Length: 75
Image 1 (cartoon, rainbow, N blue to C red):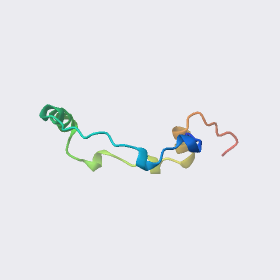
Image 2 (cartoon, rainbow, N blue to C red):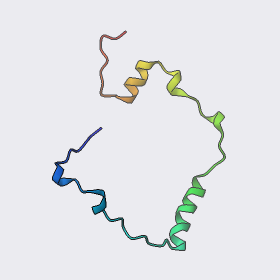
Image 3 (cartoon, rainbow, N blue to C red):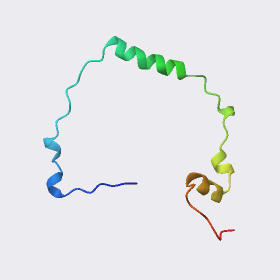
């Protein structure tokens, strides 16, 4: 994880931050995301999925998650 540290003078007080003005969403602006969600929606069928993570050995999970890590000397 990358953290960016700030000097005290760079940090604003919460009272100085103004939220952007709320704008109404047009009918067509809501229609497109609804159509996208509907086109990608299907009936949930849990039997189509398996828990591969917990079935694989731990070292295999580590090497899959972090391919650049070399685990040498570990049996």
